[in-house]
Every structure is written in C-alpha cells, then in structure tokens.
Amino acid sequence: MSDLKRYEPFSIDPMSELFHGLFRPLRGLASDGTALSDMKIDVTESDNAYTVKAELPGVEKKDIDVKIDGNVVSINAKVERDKELKEGDRVIRRERYTGVVSRSFSLASDVNEATATAQYQDGVLSLTLPKKSSSAQKSLPIG
Image 1 (spheres, rainbow, N blue to C red):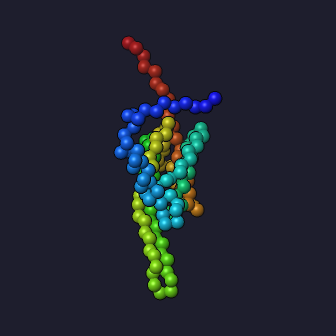
Image 2: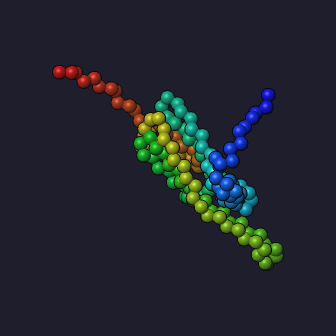
Image 3: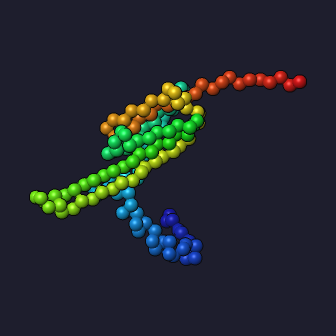
C-alpha cells in the first residue's frame, strides 16, 4: 500500500519554505567541510558516577571550559581554525573561522564537584562525574 498525504497549500508559509535551509551549508563549516558547531556527547551512568565523552576535534585544551552546577553540566569551547593556501611567496587564499561551541545538559543526580575529573586527549573530552551521596530520608513523627 502506498502512503497518501493530504496536500494543504495554506498550512505552510511560502516565504519560510522558500528560504528554509538556504544558508545552512555556509554556517558552521570550516574550509575543509567539517562541521564546527556540532559537539557530539555520550553520557553513561554507573551506580556511583556519570561518564561524559564530548568530541571537540581541533580545539586546544586551554580553550575548553566545563562548569558544574548541581546536576547541570555545561561545556563551552572556543573554536579557531586558520587555513592558508600559498603558491610560492604569494598567498592565494586565506580562510579563518572563530566561534564558540557550547552544550548544557542536566543529569538525574547532583554531581560531586570536588571529586570530578576531566581529561582531554585526541580531540575527546572525558569527564568523570561522581554522584553526590544522597542523605538518608528522615521520617518525621506526627504529633
């Protein structure tokens, strides 16, 4: 059986459809075609900690900032790319890109900031975020 779709000409704004995605290929691409605005993140959870892996290729360690506020984790990175094509002593083409990439997400449990660790190697930021120990629930007597 085929999929039938009802054509509704007045449900779509024609101007927004006309320009939809027009500038998308130009934004966030370096001169070599790699996406700069994407930060791929993997989060895994164990009984006592979260492990976060974020892909930040081409970013220097000093340009990465990680903030933890309770159960909210924010990763910010400054991205700078500079590419120059020379032919002898003449510069034929020079392209630059500077931008900021950021991601924030919340976890189910609060993070113990004092024992959290971060490593950056081969373009991958690895965070180990231990969970805060939850205090035992107290029962209040009703008087």
